[in-house]
Image (cartoon, rainbow, N blue to C red; front, side, top):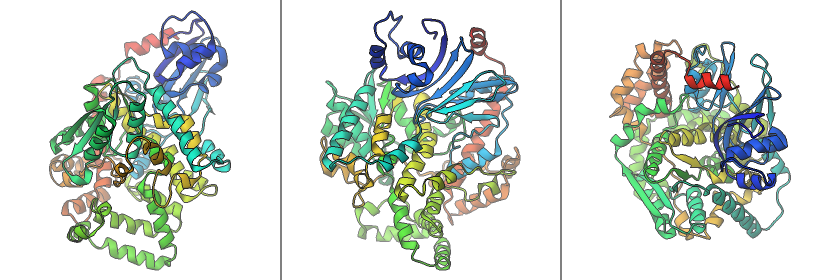
Length: 601
């Protein structure tokens, strides 16, 4: 779209929710239509790029061409809800919100960045600004890239930075009573949800029954004149099923609730679709139910609100408390003894630990009766030998412990590890973990998963908890308002308790887990065998084959559960071969749309 003066041309992906407020601030004028895009263009005319972006509330990436100054601006939203790739292909500067578009460019060669692959093998995603392809990058959240010419080096400017926001909040926490803090958060949440309910198409919400999604749905229903449509995926395995809690919340709030109980075949049928859905290798297995709940919602609505972001802002992940407890205990034990104890635990196969657990299950508290105790015991053994809480957290986030030993000729960048270390002097260990996740795990895993899964079925997913004003407020809150007496997300629970009974919130956090370990030994075994054969693993020259084959044999035998490590390799292999086939079939021809865009500029 062109601005009214003709100076600016924009390519825009996303939504600016407060465009009507910006329209009022701009004052009376003749508008050509009713879109947020037109208002954005006039905002650039009035306040320039940074001045306009500072006013935007939403999820967006856009490319803005200044025809007067002949400058290109690429901009990404504050939290990284929407994706933007950029880089060099031959002599050209290329950019897109999907790598599929860049693949079409004739000078793009698609060489794998081995260092980025090593990062993927550690985290199950490629952390920003890295990209799986050499010469390409992801624009960081809250960033403006400016390019003066196709051959010039891009300049970067941060108009909003989560780390700076967090540090400022920690240094100047709010000084109010608990009740006042709860009410202030309540008002911010109401406004954020209300903004994201503005839509001229059918709207609903994902509902898991947990605190985050239940809060979003409660605030939606409180501001709606008709029942909200809510959607849940259920599993017949009680250890993975959240649908019962979601249904109870839905009935209490009076939503029109739809639930779908999955059988293994429905979930397994998604696996071949994953490489086409995700432009980069991405192996968070909860991508499968996220896609399926998006598909379920798309039957009835075009926009769906999600509760993502609450864990990172309000201390919701179980690992936050667990890492602190482990460190408080293990720091009292000499290092050699910790190492010996870890070796003894790891010598016992996880399935044997599971057998003992099943025998003891009736004697355990309900909160401890689910999960995979053998896997957790082995992970605990790995963590217990760390010599600092930061090292413990780094190990907790890691899949392959030494990915550079598996990815040939690679040198793993320090991205996330450096982030953890840089924050350590200014915050508690819980706050270090929360901020590490906010700037890495949230945009590159959680939001990537949500965006690609929802876009694959043409569903727009909105995340009200990540309104930047809520993020800024959350980091001004003392930690005791987030985690109190072992209770996670304390302040968010107080808001939710205004709408649902407190006993609804007492179930343990579950997440969108999948029984990948059993599938790999059963219905997915043939598929996995084909991708993990020596010939397949060595065909591209990226992997040291032996460590992967060893892990696969141990997994099949049941001696160890290497589901996360094996799944990382499988998803990469499937992604690599599908992408290679897609590139060969398209022939690398430049599209008509690209040619027309170049002509317009």
